[in-house]
Length: 356
Image 1 (cartoon, rainbow, N blue to C red):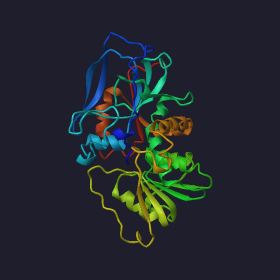
Image 2: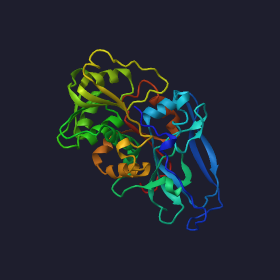
Image 3: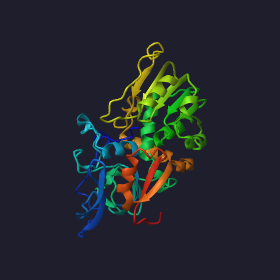
Image 4: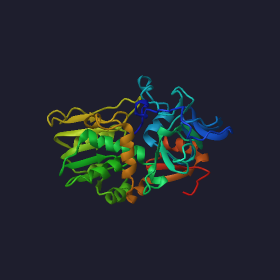
C-alpha cells in the first residue's frame, strides 16, 4: 500500500523572524535519529541541534510510527528515479541514493517555543528522531480526546480520507476493501459510516476478521469474497490483490488503487471481463488533495480533520506492535521482509515520555 507523503504534501511553513514571543536558547541539545545508510541497512546517529531560533519549536518525541508500505519501499531502495522529487518527505534529510533520514509519523511534546505550545502534545510530519526543531506552523496540537499512541494513525487516516474524497461512496453501496492492513481497515471504517453501505474487508490474514468487524465491516478470505461490489478499494501492494479487486467489481464499478509499487513492474489483468464490465481503474494518492475538495481544503486542514476523527477508541486495535527507539533499525529490517504480514501500525517508543 502507498500512504506516503511527497514534498508537495508539506505545509507551507512561514516563520516571522521579527517575532519576540518565542524562547531562544544558547545551549545546544543532543539528539539521535534513524538514518538509512544503504538499502536494507539502518543505524542510529547522534547530532547536536543548534540554538532554537524565533519562530521554531523544539519537540521531544514520545512516539513515532513506521509507515510500513512506504518506508519499507524506501528502506529497500525501490524509489523510482523519476519519483525521487515527489517522494521527498517534508523534513527528509539526504537523498534516496543514501544515506537519508526518512519518515513522517511523529508525536511529541513541545519543550521550547511559543508559550501557548509549550507542554502540548503535537503531531508532526517528521522522521524518527528523539528531539527535533521545526517551524511552529509545522506542528498540530492533539485534540484532548486523542491519546498520543492513537495519533500515530493520523497520516494513514488522512490518506483514507483523501481516498474517500476521490471515490465518493454513495448511500447503500456495496464496498469491498481488498487489503486489511492499517490503511485498508481505516478505509473500511470510514466507508462503514456512510448510511446503508455494506463494507467487506478481504485479506489473507484471518486474524484481521475481528478488527474489521469491530470497525463495522464484514470480513472474508479472497476465495470467499462477495463479488458485484459497487466500489472496490485496493491497498495490498501486490498484483494478486489487484486481480482480486478487479474480479469483485460489478458492472461499471470503480476500482480505486491506493497501492504504490515503486520501481516494481506489476501485471494487471485487463483481459477477461475488464472491458465488458466497463470497469474504471483509478489511482489515489495523498500528496495532492482530492480534486473535488482541492479548492476548499488545504493539506493542513485535511490533517487536522484526521486528528479530530481519531477520537474513536476502537482504532487502538490498529496499533499492533511496539518497540523501543533503540531497536528501530531491527524493526525496519523485519518490516521490509516476508515475515511482517501480522503487523499493522508499528509504534516506536522513545526514552523520555513525559506524562503520557
